[in-house]
Length: 335
Image (cartoon, rainbow, N blue to C red; front, side, top):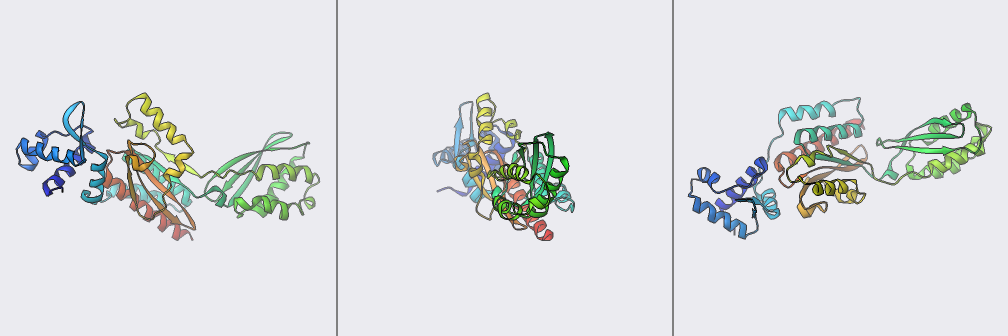
């Protein structure tokens, strides 16, 4: 059973270690707790026996264990108000009427990454649930075009369009107008069906070489990726932390950030801000992931902050709670 002084001691050690990244020794704690060094050492030994603290090889001091951080987050952490300066930075982005919701979320997470020096992630919904917002076509050669597909969530995908024969630029332009007229607002998953049943029967009324053009665009537009839309901010920030100080550490965490498997580990299904420490994150034993789900303007996704286990938990939790509320408010205003 953890005593009241031991709770306060654990809280102090966590917060000191978060600030300094150095093991905390008994001498540094005697003055604060007005106890002898022997008493503090006994309490630290008891906390170590309970699994909340651990020793390092380079010092007689202690650092929090994964269980110690978990106990701190669940029982000892005190709410920390987000500063007025931080709020102002986020409000400047979120109140900008010119910015679409997805851009506002991305820019807000960039700000949080700069403020905290951690890595931020926004994970959108399934790409196939996105709706087509615009089709642009760029000629590359006489028989090759690039079709640029833009969705309502800001997802952009480039598609190669190969033509079996030379097609006049005017016919390509008319086809692009037709696609925008009839496909905009269509769910990505429904684009092939709409091409086949709505556009194919009428394209002959618009252009002369309709079979060549239709087949080329159908092949390109029917193969839209189903990958999730994932955006990182401050991806290298975590590498500045002393926990990741070897080449192997750096290679390991970067490879995990690049992995498609990362997406399923980041996604959050609950509405509350949740903290996943070390092994709980399923990403890496040396990181903490703080994340939450947002719902706004008929869309939903996950926002997350990834940092070391030695994280400013109160600050990050409060920032995500604030951002989640602000995103959902902006979403309701845009409806």
